[in-house]
Length: 246
Image 1 (tube, rainbow, N blue to C red):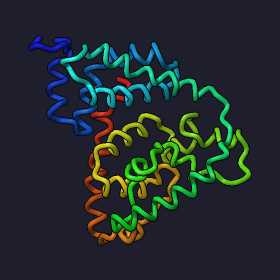
Image 2 (image 1 turned 135 degrees about the vertical axis):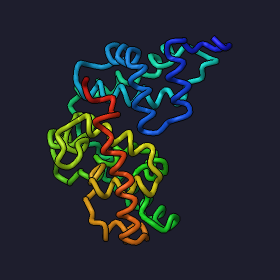
Image 3 (image 1 turned 45 degrees about the horizontal axis):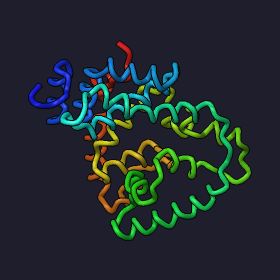
Image 4 (image 1 turned 90 degrees about the vertical axis):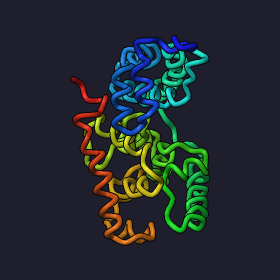
């Protein structure tokens, strides 16, 4: 046991993942610990594909906080995945338009300008989320809200309900959407912003290479090169994505 609680059956995969937390490494590790992840999804989630996908992402995030000296891998994962119960409950609740969403929209514009001034480029949604304390899903909801929307309309565009704000433009494949999220998490802030504007993530408008270059203070050629590297990662979905059924 090497003086810790990590189960022998998961040790090789965990130690390998510790040295390779790239999208490829994340996918391989999720496959290795899939029995525990599935148990957590069954305990705290629902039968919906969205719940299963959220559970896998939650498990990966939980493992970044895992300390083998304090608990078994299975115990840690199942404890951390209890938050999936709240996500599942939100899926079934009838959402209403929060009165504070207009204030949040104003805050979003203010902080986006402040960060743009500090960074010399438009901030990524990850950077905005850190500054505002809001999730990317919440940013999408703020951006897509329009005065006069009914509760039903907001439910349709809310990511937690599986609506259009949580779906990539033109995409009908939830597995692909989750693979994009895994790739996104491991990109630099600059590349995150390029991916956001290229695909129109989180309620943003899609932009051309020239528009992206202007927003980020880079040449169109530099943007093209970065997009090519990002596309290489996205193209690995068929071989590496843990969300594609065998």
